Image (cartoon, rainbow, N blue to C red; front, side, top):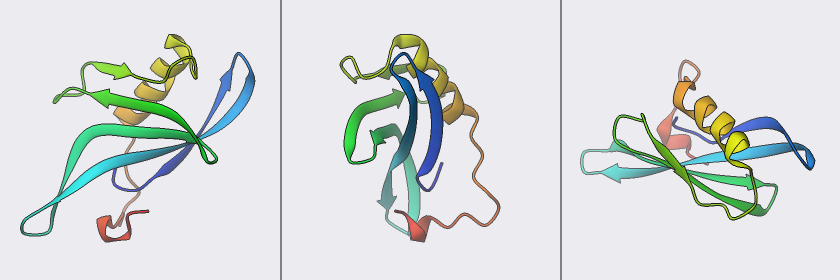
Length: 94
């Protein structure tokens, strides 16, 4: 995932529109590196981070009480299988 993306999820408290922001680092040579960390927010309210290991086979969620384990698992699965649209430009990081 290069740019931020929206994701709608039905939580125990009702529907939530999440913004998922990948934490990427710019390396020498203008190469973007995905850190495996994704910040979640609902509008301006931070909802914690989902962090993946190197091969994205395991994840953790550090939001305290924001999402249930099952809800966080849905978001993690979305992130894991998300494909950027053709022509996604890392120079347009939001």
